[in-house]
Image 1 (cartoon, one colour):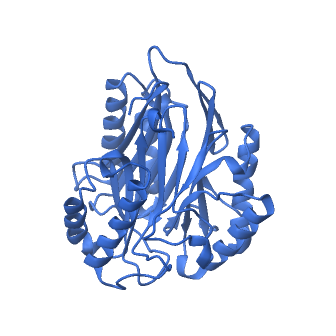
Image 2 (cartoon, rainbow, N blue to C red):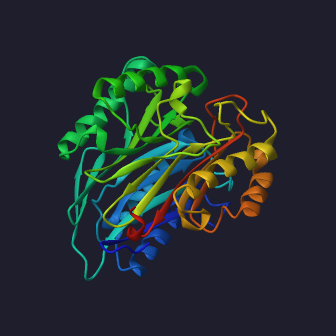
Amino acid sequence: MDGPEAREIFLVCQPVARTADAGEQTEAIYRAALAVLEAEGGSFAAVVAETLFLRSLRADLELVRAARDRILATCSAPHHRPAMTEIEQPPLSQRALEVSIQAVLPLPAGPPVRVDAFSQALRVQIGEEVRLYAGGLYGTGDAYQQTLTMFGVAEELLQQAGMEFRDVVRTWIHLREIDRDYADLNRARRAFFEARGIDPVPASTGVGGRLVPAGHDLCLGVYAVRAAARKVMSTPLLNDAASYGADFERGIRIAETNKVALHVSGTASIDEAGRTVHPLEFEAQATRMLQNVADLLTGQGAGFDDVVSAITYLRHPADLGRLRKKLHEAGFDGFPHALVAAPLCRPDLLCETEALAALPISARS
């Protein structure tokens, strides 16, 4: 996606071979990603965020890390470290892993893109705009305290970057035991936001997944943009999630220097009263999920053709064929799209999707 300030690239990479081990699959992914970046006039130094979706942390994490390091050691920026999240959410492709990558490249005639790395975050400056990408943030204590402290870690990173938590546009929260800990997450998140007067709150996804450090139950990823105009996305098909205790916006529209970004939160088969629609009926749930996303985008003058990346979470991998059919029928395809297995926040929900759409800056109003 070319804007006036930079070229932004969104990739979802999966290996072709199913028979290779996790290390070989990882090498194939990063060779291909580097080739794409080089063909676009960039390098690995342009990568700002990575999410690694792994089939098995226990069996494959060390193989994946070693293989990634081997390939990146040969590139022009071997020590560059993007904001990274490693999560066990098995790819529905049956591969050992898939990798989602976001990169920001300066345009030949545009302003420089400055990248400053610290801890688990990247501060990226495009012209006058400052962004922060962070991943793999953890807290300590029980689930309630872990939520408060991991949000506190994010706040410290933001302050180091000259930002504050009200600059956060989007969060991703992974829970090891989502059925057990989702209520504590919501209570602690509300307490944190209320204490700091955060309004509007960020868009967000909260899903299950196994985490890398064994001693933690929650993990946080953050995207923030300083001093950009934003507004809440809504639709008559969905109520305010805060009404049932989940403090996130259904979507956030933000006018960045390079694009107008539409961040659609994790969206499932929910109705205007916050109820699950069509409990345990997969086709009907997939239809309502996509209707909700479509209506959020339509309200902003956008559609599925404007989506640049997405993740869909499926409770039961056996539903993959039916999911693909529904996605294709709705036209929710033709962009980088990770399909992974993950527990969802309600036991009667079978699928959930999130999306990022982009409009030209002429659509600021």
